[in-house]
Length: 345
Image (tube, rainbow, N blue to C red; front, side):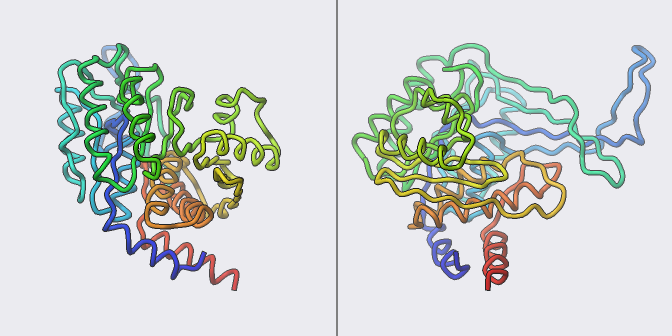
């Protein structure tokens, strides 16, 4: 892709409205200094001293962070947090982001704020090392009243946005935002507005999702289709085309170091190889950067291949950001595409 073409697409980003419906969590980083490690008098165990605390929206919030970094004009947040300290921090972090609209983000005493607590050891001359994570999740079903409110929010926004992103991060079905009731609302929206771009990603797989644009990895596609995991690129392409034709929607398959593969409902297939690694990497957040950039670029008018080239560049930028769940700006993506353009020339 020529960098001039990316610039013309990115010029549309401030005009876009995107809804993000899904599991917003709080990413809380504890930066540890090993030089300040002590031994507990009471237990005899090492005590790690926290020298800095960083918080930012995670899970669906990571997608939102990437949309913000791209300069999307309006980003509507559909989700929930608890009436707890973590919820206060998450809401404050979301509200601080330019363009973010919080009218459909709910706080409730019936839910705990989904939180990832990540202790990071910072040793001199070494990349940050993550210790055992401490998570807080919901282990009970999302209350029906809350599900109905979230579903109604999706239906209300459907006529006012250029794209929807669905992000399912929970391990247990129906304990997060994208419950059966909410997905039924999305199904109704997809039928009523077949041209509305809706991109879905789920860590549990997309079995219960309506036929919208699917983004997944090759293992997730195999589980969804009930086929043996494909190894060869040709077999992955065949499965992706079959799924796209069945759903009548695009399918995107992330392939780690092999890049991204995309298929359209009319049988078009594209593969964009991954960009070379440029040093130490951390893959956390790469998939969310891909989701955000696929959605933004397609909503701005990109072709199938163009959207994948942009998403690939964004993922390459993110994986080289250590000790955080990173994002990629328009300037960073443009520079990387420009460098690739010059190297080809």
